[in-house]
Image 1 (tube, rainbow, N blue to C red):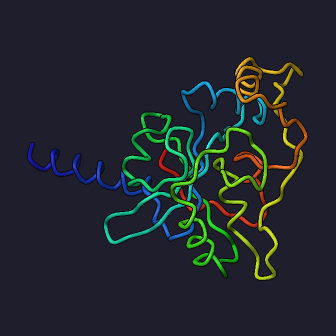
Image 2: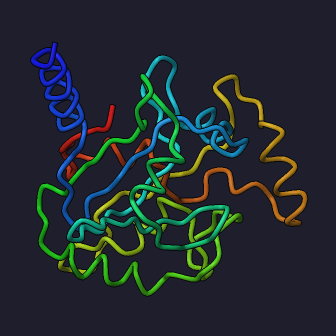
Image 3: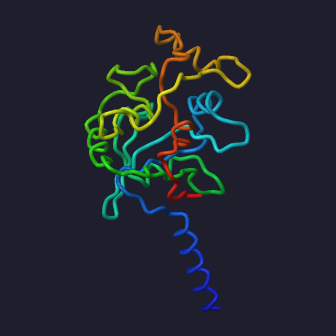
Length: 209
């Protein structure tokens, strides 16, 4: 009986190990799904039917037993939080955090990128989804700070889409931009987690599910 218990514990530990990526500072954490109305609107505009749709991206900061995450969120603007907190609040797949870790194939300049992003802590969330306004949404924080040696962005800005697959504008976006007194920035250059995760400069290094 005791032997069976030890085997069960060992299996549990090994299973958890397989689903715990070894992070490096500067890795990007892509979260799929999400329960918020904004996450649903992002998935409707940028996702694909049946695919793993990412609605959030954050920057990993590795530490000795105390990994943290740098992110831009609607709840707190640009902030640092513990990795455990980030994973606990993530959507679930099979009871595990729906988060995928990706790493730049060429890591030159990643340390500088993270330091630039750190200096953005405390800035507000960019509900306007417009560039160069001193505010950041999640993938904008990455795009603005992950630069090639020549100073150009490592990730591609593309015309943004806010419409659902059937061409309609979700009520979330209509109501948000009415409150802001701004037009929906349809086709304004920008980024989103789904497109960013598909960039050739990234490779997956693990997932929690």
